Image 1: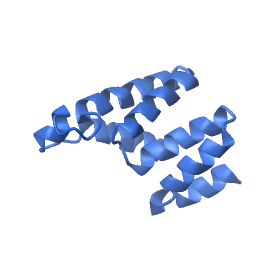
Image 2: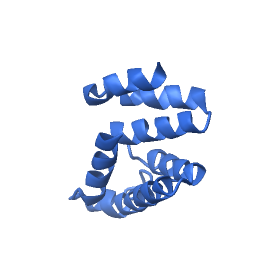
Image 3: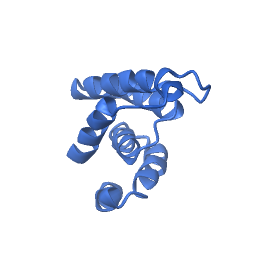
Length: 110
């Protein structure tokens, strides 16, 4: 869980050199700035125990183009905590494509 939170925080501070991706002018979903805001809100809401609202933020960010294992892992764990087992399995399997998350995913799904 700590690795996922660190990687999400790194994503917020990652530089985006493609202005279309940064500002969302390329028509491919949310801008990086919008995704970063959603990640920040999701982290904050999760830390305050507002899991449903945190899920909403992460879902919007993922649908808007955020495709990193940390996001799938984080939302997968939130789905588990809120009883959404099928959604959890789907998200965690996406996270498990990254070797850094395989063992944690296996543990979470055990």
